[in-house]
Image 1 (tube, rainbow, N blue to C red):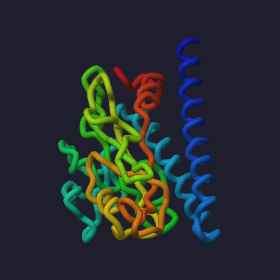
Image 2: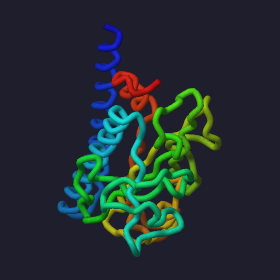
Image 3: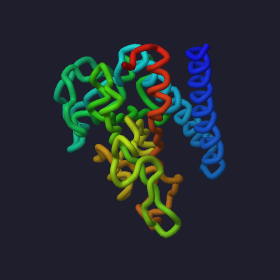
Image 4: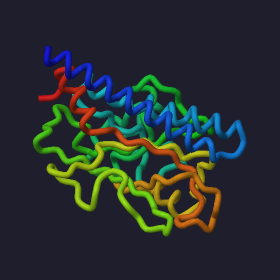
Length: 239
């Protein structure tokens, strides 16, 4: 009975996460430009929620989160290289020992997802290295991804995580990122996301170049650690 209750609880939490993302998409779309852009934004928010669920499902089956797919030739940055490249859309073939190695593209083929967001750009994906090795030793693992935003004055604050990620104060195990309408870094904060391996930016959409951090249309979601662990425990893939 306890196991079934936990499974129901984890399922409800996942549904709540998807509903929250959908609500955020609706609220953001109210301030969007054209109706076609609103539609693309809504569909991309839904894709991010679907990718989040697929990552958790992968971990529940395989006992770990997947490694990223390497960035395509010509897209490699300081955050990822073509090392370990295999079939496009598949997770890299060699372990990723560093935050940079564990940052690349979402392995959409392994997850059974569409290849691109609704602007035609591949989703980016960054995962804490220790979470890509099975079995996950949850008493020793530290989730390392942090997400920041800006207040009205441009000051930074944490949306996910804090100054120091630790066993007692965990950050997020993984982040999924859509580059939004423009795949090119058009501002300080967008350029930061393009190069990020641990610290990512999540802000309301803005077309104002003079806004703190510049114009911004990236979309981002984190994998919740407690839901990840609950789903893996229910599937008996977590020691």
